[in-house]
Length: 329
Ligand SMILES: Cc1cc2nc3c(=O)[nH]c(=O)nc-3n(C[C@H](O)[C@H](O)[C@H](O)COP(=O)(O)O)c2cc1C
Image 1 (spheres, rainbow, N blue to C red):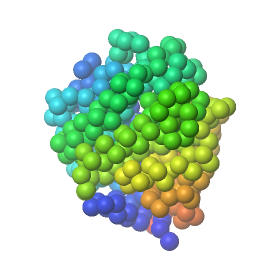
Image 2 (tube, rainbow, N blue to C red):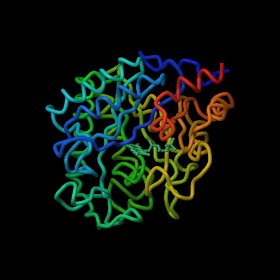
Image 3 (cartoon, protein in one colour):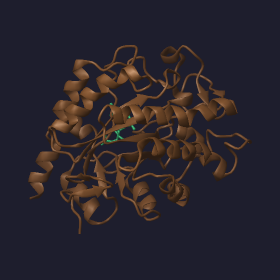
């Protein structure tokens, strides 16, 4: 029976334990998305903490997909040198290093992009301030190539793989969600239509990564809004994400953000993750408010999830993982 400390083989990599540092944005870059010394030191300090894997905060694949003026960029080849410093800092700590790649879609404020937000439809993510413009088919068809180019940059920077961001109301979540996707063309309507862009993106990224690099998907499997995606619908189509080349599903939720005010307790998206896990044969990570090592360990032992993402607790205490594993010994 696997526990929190059991290694996990994934393609040609092995995670030394089941603790993941999930992506958490610092927005410490310049206004061109270039890495700062402070950001490199942040990852060096945290990756010394003993986790199996560190997923770096969301990096935009195109300036049009940026949600903050100081967000990390992976949109141009000149970003590679700075990203390489982050990958090296994580490898110094012996964790697997993953770059999260993203397009913020309708959630990109014009103050960050200088242009109107783009989404599948003219539906705002609840709480957002601007109406998005529905993307043209030509604009949609550019997206897989942008993610694939970003994945190639991640590999050039020395990362072990990428995580495609499909959660928290950003572009790919907006396409899968029946709440935000009201299109009637090939990119909307049926489940097939809503999945088309995420699947085309994953296939393009898998091809760019080649056979040994890791492909993770941050899967927004529980929108938490009326008329949004539910974990049971998400589980029904999860096998198609796997067929597109995903190695690990990092299940999260919240169309309006990763930490919905009405979700509390340890593991507030772990039930959604366990519903998805029953539908697939690849490892699944769960997240949400986990601070207690004993509870994290039990989630693995009971087979609810294969890995746990511990976010804010690791931000607060960079040695959380080491202390957790010692406490369980
Ligand atoms: C400051 C902060 C920034 C975040 N940035 C990202 C991000 O860039 N990408 C992402 O997928 N999730 C992001 N998240 C969500 C976390 O990865 C995680 O899912 C969430 O915090 C719940 O886990 P926790 O309760 O263990 O912190 C962020 C969370 C926080 C607190």
